[in-house]
View 1 (spheres, rainbow, N blue to C red):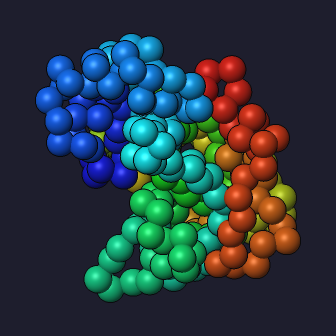
View 2 (cartoon, rainbow, N blue to C red):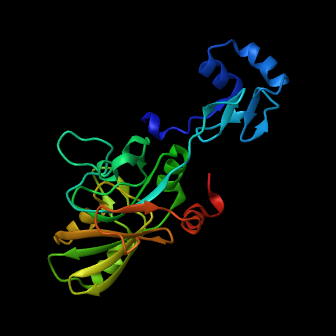
Length: 244
């Protein structure tokens, strides 16, 4: 996993030693004299664990003061869910100046899929949100080439065996909206899962649009390619009781 994906937790004495270039034993003296301040309070323990968003100062000089960023984007088609790519424009490039903030994607979408995408510089939160063990529901609108029948509902609910990985998908909810459009809810994200599930019926997916992750829905005022910060309510909905 890349540096952007790690939680970057460290002991305070090790962090100070690396930042200032002093012996870790000397950090104890700085601590005793009240010269190290962590999140606005004098530090008390050299073994205190800090993370990438802990504010640390030494003699009033800021050693670290990084703000966590949580964004939602309305991903357009033809843009890849990556921080960099030699062939395609990336979602991070759509963010302009925010692209320099070590942002990465929490739950990717395929090149031609659209809709809700979450981006953050908080690796711990990203990994937690993307973990299959959390079983966070993702909801999609799907347009297919051939008419839908009730057979799809049962097949999705039972799960499908994918011989390539040797796994059976978790039960998925499918609701038919019209002859050619359905809403699908998943609690996992296997490789091209929705397209492969419809492929069992030899029915090609023409459009795949993610409308929600958990209880957070895509802001309909966002045009394709636009983004905004998550509000406190949306963060609370995503985090729930089992937040990291």
